Amino acid sequence: MKRTLQRTFQKGLATLALMVLGAFGVPAVAVGVETETIETLSPEADGLFREGVSQFEAEDYAAAVETFSELIDRASDLPEAYFNRARSREVLGELEGAIEDYTEAIALRPDYVDAYINRGNVYVTGATQASDLEEALADFDRAIELEPDNPIPYLNRGNIDAALGEIEAALDNYDRAIALDPDYIEAHYNRALTLGEIGQVDEALAGYENALSAIPAEQSRLRIPVYLNRGMLWLQQSDPQAAIEDFERVLDIDGETPEAFGNRGLAYASLGQFDRAIDDLQQAAQLFDRQGRNEAAQQAREAVRYLQQQQ
Image 1: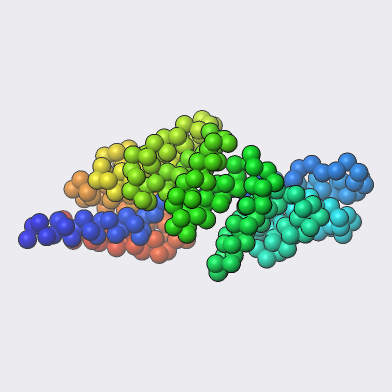
Image 2 (image 1 turned 90 degrees about the vertical axis):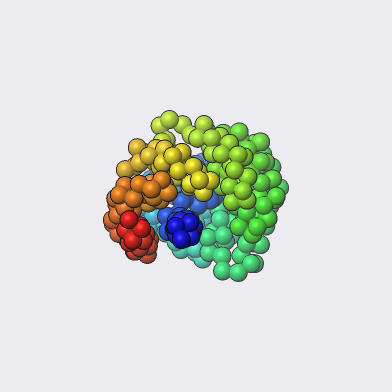
């Protein structure tokens, strides 16, 4: 009877780890706004261009859209103006408008690699059918054709392959990106995530280590998703102590990361340290609440109740 209870507990623990306290997913990479343009703009148009860039960099995206719209009224043949308005609209979630502007930028400059990359990302973000992913792949393929030494489209193409279950193609694209840029953090990270999902644990751990090695010391927050996902991999491999160490590394960087508390709680639970597990899961629930993530908070509380019943 005791053995059956233990199996049930471990099954519940694994389900919670996968469903509730998830890690950070696969990132795509977009290209930022253009900060330089042609020198033949009138002083008024040049002023509008620079004002829009400043507004974007200050994260006032709505104002940037208005400014670039005014610039387009004055210089309707300027591809950078459409590109920058598209990038602003993309951040605001105005996906259809962003696609229209990227398309106009490409019409004005058919070799506009950055516009192909960003339009491909928008197709992925707003994908509702297979044809949207096909459009994205076509954009990334075109970007690679125009600029084969650019690692970004390989990374983003790999993301689509991974999402479609085309694992070999995904890994090949990540490898191509890394070959072009050995310190490409996102490529190492996405490759490690993919390897972990197919059970190649040693290779995934090596990939996470490569990602960590590529992160500059002053950008410590970039380490959070790496530690969190590596910790979850340790947890899935029944090494809760290694998992705890990674979740604590996350909390050293940002002490209000609910996934780190929640998954550390699961690791403590697997060690039989139920009081510490419950404390961590309750902290995770409070932080999820604070972030407006009500479903995750509720599931964390259900995990607490489950553990309390095992005491």
